[in-house]
Length: 252
Image 1 (cartoon, helix red, strand yellow):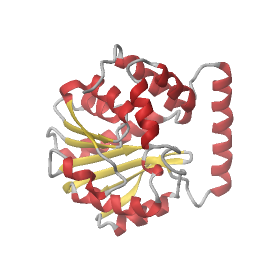
Image 2: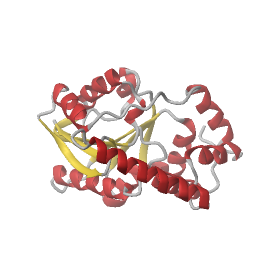
Image 3: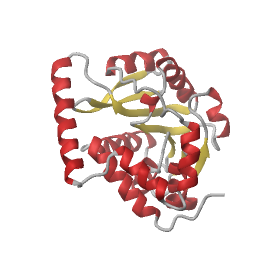
């Protein structure tokens, strides 16, 4: 049973602010993703899969943009899923599944989706698993459907500039933490762990990820485009870029 969260929107806002410390242009990538959905649905109500959807950030923005969308959110984190469930209520189907195994899609309510969207999440998976997941994502898209992955994806032709951009972003982020204008990742989870409703779920999360998700692995865009091509998509390319981050798109 999902615990009662007194004000899920406060947690949504807190999560957004914490994430924006890492990703100041976060909303820009979401807008690019949803523009892409709009381009492939020909005015129909879209069927969207929010992969590693966490608190429901993408699902909420999808439903704001397309109020009649059928949205499915998949994640494994019990604390984030509780916030998503409280915020989305009956507007989305929420699935608990592990993207680290190919069985994740067996619980999906639909066989085909117009779009599969994910942001700042898949870098927790090892390289070989991401390649496999790309092929599995292709299999749940309808012909002409689109997959968009936005994440840390440096441009491998700009290594020195990318390093400078990342150093600058780190310094600005640390200054905001020092001034108290933003919560860090660890501070956010500490507060969630102190909340009566979320505390047992945060404890379960720690049991699922006893050492964190995994070491972060952030290959360049070229790696992702090659992996998507190998997975069988007929069109692949870079949809959006913001400094060391990018969104790649692939069309079935």
